[in-house]
Length: 194
Image (cartoon, rainbow, N blue to C red; front, side, top):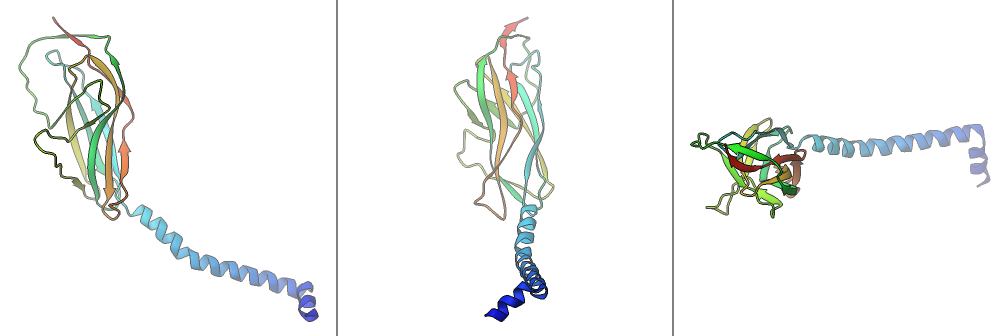
């Protein structure tokens, strides 16, 4: 036992101990490196839906509806599946603006329509009154889809809202993720004839 203690207290023993510790640390790093590299790669190899190009139209003279346009893009490296697309109202208040309207026939055809109400806080953009089942949308890597939503409010209110998308990566269907826009204020003023 004394010879071991003498060895480790001598210069050669201290040097040998340092070399042994460095070797042990190198072995641990070599064992853990594949784990951390696979985690890094798996976080890069997922679908990633992003909402962009949000635009709210002005009110036309003949209409009390607004049009909202935006795109959803898969910026990830795998397929992403959209399971819900909602308009979420954080708050609403009565509008203090008067909108002068003229009578005219509608011209545009809209892909989606959402009727807002001050009592609601979440409105399904893709919802349909004739069906409970809405099929998810599949976004391949790099794919973009444009959405046009006609917004209508029977009540004259200002809505503070944003668009929220719930989706999952095709490789991890149990992990529902969220993408959303910034909040915007959308005013539906009182209509008054010109």
